[in-house]
Image 1 (cartoon, rainbow, N blue to C red):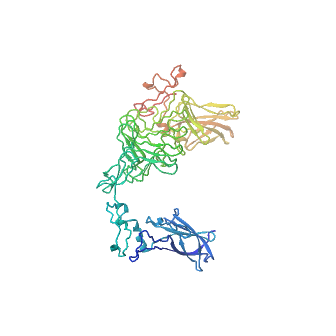
Image 2: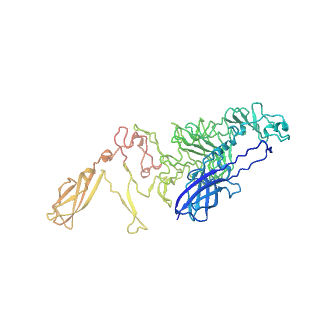
Image 3: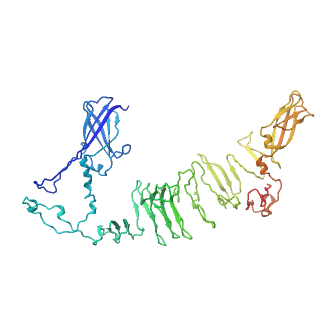
Length: 640
């Protein structure tokens, strides 16, 4: 159990020494005053209202956050508590290097947390470390007059020689100060362009120059803050990450502009080359990574454009044998794209192209979306003519798929055609998708369940199979029908089939057995929806056990019931009532018994084989302003 502590207090003080050279005691400029890298810390601790006797183990940790995060520095010490629970320690006393000054070089807040072991762990809240007022001036030690040392470059000057006694008053010659011996600057610069780096082992003029506050690589006249001029075939910038682990990127770009790009590359070559090229050997890295944190606008994580018929808007290569992506794009904008590729060529080329040469697994293009209304991969073809595709997939693998869709919760592949309108549309074969095969077999199949069972299929002969329920909200037209079940007397070895009962009308059948009262009469109650659903009633009565020649329907259906009379008191009667549907849907979709085939379908057959005709089953789907009605708007149907 974690001990309770009554109270605590923490006080931190930084001790800083300032060395001052005396004018009466000349010393070498190399003499240094060592400042101890220790931090004096005082605090108090009480456990269960009492102070533990003797030394107590404690861990001191410095953080950059008030809560959470990983410690920047830790140290374990044994702390002596006095009778009141007070103690003082020197942080860094147990370490050879003391407290690293780099912890405070960034000028950021630092928090100290103390953990006692009495004997269980007690974590005290973190406290903010504050500085001694005059020690704050030490933060200016990294600058010269507020400017970085790199801002100063001294011109060449003659050696002034040793400083004489007239300068020191001591009568002794001493080593001159650094500022009195100025080194000469040499190199490849001019009066206005000073080279600050030079390499003779690179190709071409790969120098680093500074001019007017701008920096140029490979150019002596940079016109922007950073300008790079390269001639190594990679455009201006080439990114390479040779790490074999981690999340490094070949090129990383970030933009907060709604209309900007994380990385933008342009290649005006009419053959070959890439706008942006990135490569990563890290299994978890990216050849190219772009991020756009804008929540509005049309910004892109990565945007690539190519006018070459054989080029690519964005091309990414990842040679890792496990993990990683050739191109990875990410955006948090609801109107943006993780990766957006545009190809303006009049012929050939792709907006985005993905190729996978893996011999096992892998995908040419892989997309993922966590949006409930988004898409892992979305393809749009805005052309109103030709044979373009929104998404096109091709595979030469005998066990692969041209297009493969997997969804762990919903639809794996869905297709829609949005060219239809209320004024009519052209229905073509496969409005949402076309499936065909030239060698027979299965055209479309569905696999479901954890064991991969086949739940439906359609074969090349038009035969279909569904393992579950089939729900049809419209009309079902068929050549014949039956039920097929395992035979009740031999379910393991036989099937039992019965044909459907057919009628030229949309007829419903109701039946039952009634028991007559002492008067030889009985009322039969029908469902409460009977008269709302049906009309044009027909009756059938049959006496059970003995003849009943006077048996008749005494009252026809009214208020969803009818009356039987004329039977034997106490006798039983089997009854049947039929009705013709007259509900709203039936009235709107009445099935005509006989109709002429449309002119375009005359001479063709639904089942040509049974009439001795060749050519297989004819496809009678034709252009029609509205399915189920002819050109004049009259209801139509095909007799099967």
